[in-house]
Every structure is written in structure tokens, then in C-alpha cells.
Length: 206
Image 1 (spheres, helix red, strand yellow):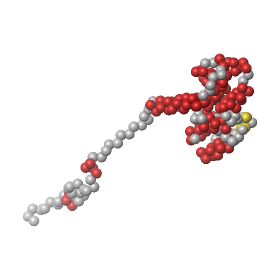
Image 2: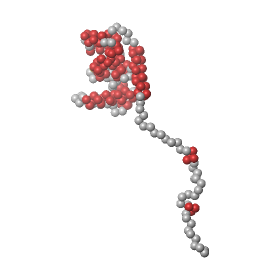
Image 3: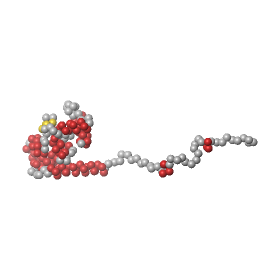
Image 4: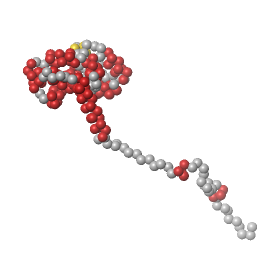
């Protein structure tokens, strides 16, 4: 949830900065993790957010996507290859889902998708695009298989980032020599002691 909170803060700040005509209060990010959690729990129980109906599951999401598209648009989506449909539709249809259905701030649909294992807003949108595409082509959606695909995709990307990571700073510490750990004074007179003071010359004949 901490990752989702940070993503939400970044998204909310971007909306606030790029859309000055919108209310700052509406897009003000939560100040704390506790505040984010409180808002999140409130949002996932609502069937409407900002006047937009929020689907509660995959079937309702597909029904809403039918309302968002006409037959010519559905035919174009149907004709796209599955391996490129997300790339072609994410920038418009996908972003509309992310924004209208509250994937960053949390909604009952995003909570449903999180429970299926899809946790990133962009992945949620692509998950629904693929599900809609398969539905239009009368193919089985296979929810669990799709969710596993996105989880594995994120896991591989994370491993690649770790393997390509650069060392920002390297610090080498020398271990002290064993004899430097002694606490007893070294043999010999201490500096400034009487033993080191120069003896006064003795006059001859004394």
C-alpha cells in the first residue's frame, strides 16, 4: 500500500499542477499514510466517485466499456491483434479508465483488481483492455491467467532494474591491525616526562 500511496501522491500533484482550473482541494494528496488509508477505505465502498459510476467487478466494467464505445469503435478494437491492443488503446481508453474509475486514489473496481493480483494502475487499465478485447472476440478471458501475466511482468521488470543498477558510492574501510587495539601503553617514557627532560650540565669541579 505504501507504493500505491506514493504513486497516488505523484499522480495527484501532476493533476493539480497541470490543471489549475480544477479545485485544489479535490486533488490535494493525503498528508500521511494514515489519511490515505482512511480515504481509500471510504472510496472502495462507493458506487460513484466525482459523479462517475464505478463498476464493482469485471462484468460491470465490460458493460460500461460497451457504453463508452459505439459499434464502429468496438469493431476496430476487435480487429486489433491481442499483442498490440494495449499499446494502441492505453493512451486514450486506458487513461480514461485510470482517471474516471479512480485507480490511483482507490475505488471499488481498483480494489477488486488488487484482490485479483493486479496492483499497478497502468496494469489495471491494460488488464481491462485485454479482457474487453477477448470478450469482443468471444475468447475466454481467463482472469487468473491474465492476473498472473501482469504479476510476472512486474516481477521481471523489478529484477531487471536491480541487475542494471549502478553503484552510487562505494566506501572501503580498512580493518585495524591487531596490535593497534592494545590498550596498554607502549614501552618507553611518555612525552614530557622527567625521563625525557634534558639534564642540566654539571660544572666541572663540583
